[in-house]
Structures are given as C-alpha cells and as structure tokens.
Image 1 (cartoon, helix red, strand yellow):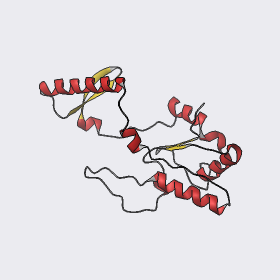
Image 2 (tube, helix red, strand yellow):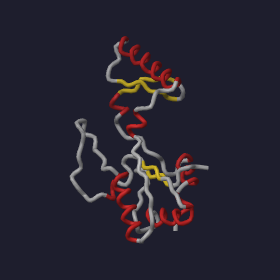
Image 3 (cartoon, rainbow, N blue to C red):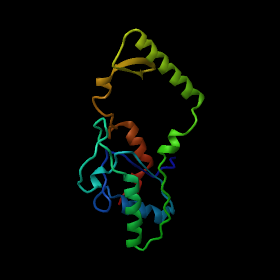
Image 4 (spheres, rainbow, N blue to C red):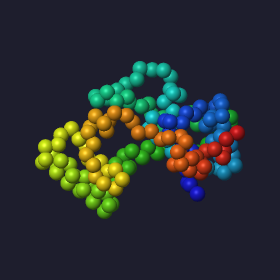
Length: 173
C-alpha cells in the first residue's frame, strides 16, 4: 500500500476541473471520504496548465519549468474557498532537503566507483563521455548520446501501471 494518493508526471496530462483526468474534483472527493491526501508532483508536470507565456531557458538552453507545486497549491486553496470546503494544506518543496541529506554508505561507494571510472577514462584519453551504469556494469556514454533525449516514463509500462494501481485511478469520477 502506498502513502501517495496522486502522482503527477509530465507524460500523463491532467486538467484541474473538467474531464476524466480532472484533479480537483477527485482530490476533494478523496478528502471528503478519507480526510487527507498526499500528492507528489514531478518537475515538468502540468506545464500545459500555465498561461501561454514566454518560455525561459537556462544558460545551457534547457527550458525552465514553471513551478507547478506553488501553482497547484493556489488552485487547491481557491477551489476549497469557492466550494466552501475547509482545507488545511501543507506544501513541501523537497529539492533542498534532498540535496542536503548525508550520503549513505552505498552512495559513497557508488560515487567512488563512478569517479574511479571517470579518472580511468580520462587517463586513457577518452573525452566527451560520462560514466554510467547499464545492466550492472559501468560504461562510458558519449555526451551527445546521453543528452540526445529526455528519459520518459512509458505510460503503458508495468512500472507506471503499478503506480497508477496504488494512486489516483480509484478516485476518478
């Protein structure tokens, strides 16, 4: 059983109030029935909900995503007020917390092994590569290949079906 009730990712579009994938009516139905809900939101989820505006990019040319967490917090609070529903919302942006956690022993070992292979690659003259792990083995991946496309969740994969079976679908309609 999962502690997460809604998992929002960029690959699966949702709406706020209209349609089959409307988040807010489903969320407030759950709140009425269970009095709590946990939503996790991936960076990049719900970008289509923002007003069309000039997309900003970082210095590397990557599109900067709008803050969907703050956006949804406001929309949830507004929906609760419009429907005269009490809503006690807690919003956490874990990015700093995640980056400031001490490394576990396995993290330290993995980082040491990646660093070892990176140094070995550099000493043997390999450039423009990153060290990665594939099927349990460390590999060298050309940077253009590693950055050629973003990794996406396949919506028909076993992984995503498992996530969905424990979260949002049971609160539709």
